[in-house]
Image 1 (cartoon, rainbow, N blue to C red):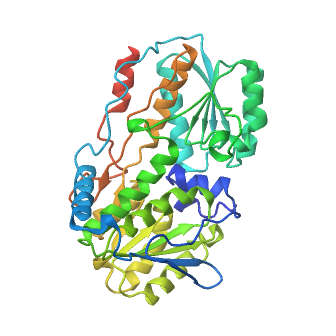
Image 2: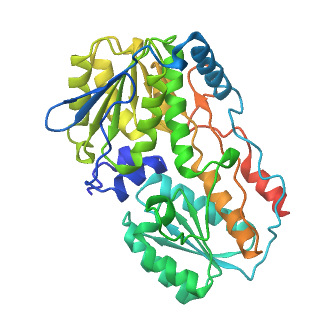
Image 3: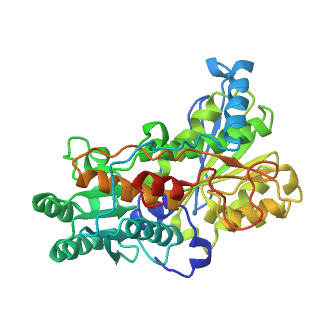
Length: 408
């Protein structure tokens, strides 16, 4: 994978990074529509398009459904969204005898770097010694990181954005050595392959005890519901999603939301990862030209949004198209600040870093980690928009953990 796109990828959400570095240039998400007899058609050699429309027979396509959508969106536009101040208590305490390894999914990738730095900062608050291993966006190299950590005699390991299936050998060695491995934004082997043995000691869970897959679904649902609410139940949406296995959660969330909306339409375009930095904008321009009635534009993440937003502007009625700009990084929020008809989802990667240290600390004490309280919040011009920079998290999670650990 070329890093010529680095400017687009800095601050990329963990979910997009997963698609880029785990799926590589292979794999493809399903392009079949859901609800209302979706029809699949070719969109040239570079992407596949699937159109999903409601048949008008869904039980959820009534005014009560739209009222529920509006209520859901209103909650996530609130000052705290669905974020919780959690955990309420923690047995973790400073212990300078502890040492851990932080397996970084790639220093070149903004989300990976931020999470690793946050985990290291939190660990140092507890007096723990840390070693950071950079996988350089190659998940399989995390096996080397695990083996190096075991050779150093660390007490525990945190792993970011790496599914178990890519590092079975290393995880088996850690398990045999009795060294706990705590995963953030990664799926255990039993989650990706039915009948397989789970090898992670624990995997991070989010507000209301959501799994990572459920959090990915929440990300897609929030974006789809905002677009439907903004269009007052008449959203005609174009979604542009990578051809990558991990995208299925977001795509299914889009399809499920639109299948229930009687007067909504959804066209999904699955584009190859190789389109980044080459012809992604051109794909968007072609689809928007073919579908001039589009009033909602749903790229997968900020990286896709920043690359395709010029295509929205080129339509001549960009101010009428509500556009999703991803996970609340500076680039996407700048579009909102500049007056674009855009909205975002607040995904705080640093919270995940601090939560990983709390989870690992509980494992050291023989306890099961608890969920982090990290939920969802929507951002638009009138709600939750910071004056500059990335999104501000509505809960001071750093102070929360410091207080719980007795180091504040």
